[in-house]
Length: 71
Image (cartoon, rainbow, N blue to C red):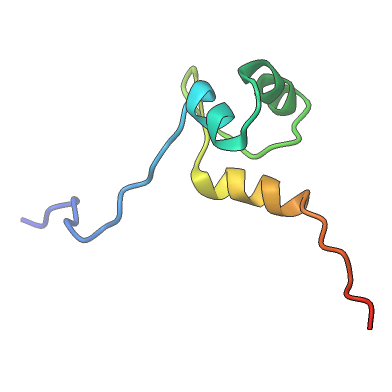
């Protein structure tokens, strides 16, 4: 019998609103607004809204401005 659980499969880290808001350095209220406006990636599992660090990093990266070097 083959097991469906692979011990080498990495587990995902999921953050809830409070943890994700802290990760972003913002308030839970602001994060809820971003979710409601569909401006930040998130995952719905049942009634839970969860965030992966990759989703939060993508949000940060999309809003990071890097000025061009003047020579």
